[in-house]
Length: 171
Image 1: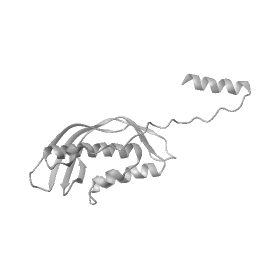
Image 2 (image 1 turned 60 degrees about the vertical axis):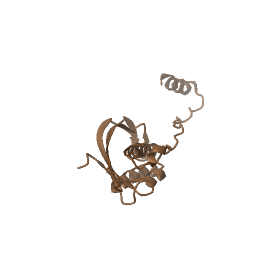
Image 3 (image 1 turned 90 degrees about the vertical axis):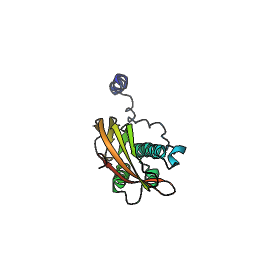
Image 4 (image 1 turned 30 degrees about the vertical axis):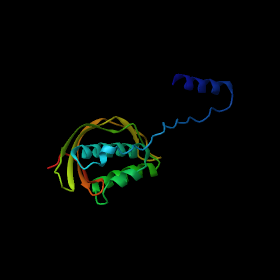
């Protein structure tokens, strides 16, 4: 950091051309996570794999603003899901960005009832530190790491989808 500042200071003293504007390097290419084969199973392990995949897709949407996969995995009437979709979409449409702040799953508990179309998953998560910029006009701010319990109601027809998403345990 000292060298670019020193170089700009010396250029200013030498009467040379104005220094080029500082640019931010683009982040490495982020690709959408692939659905694991196990996440298609109608079983406790399938429900857990799907829930983990949903968190990966949530992270992808947060870091890219691409909410298409998140919307596809969320039931139309899932208000908790819609809040995240809207938040990520609005952040990026307004020129904002989220950097490095992602959800990590520490543990999962499934309440699986064989034969039921609805299954319940509770995830103990932590969110990593990152940078959030709400819009092109706003100043970026640091997001602090945190821990949360996340609950999902999973609906099964021909595939899993999240029909309810919220903070806190199921109960």
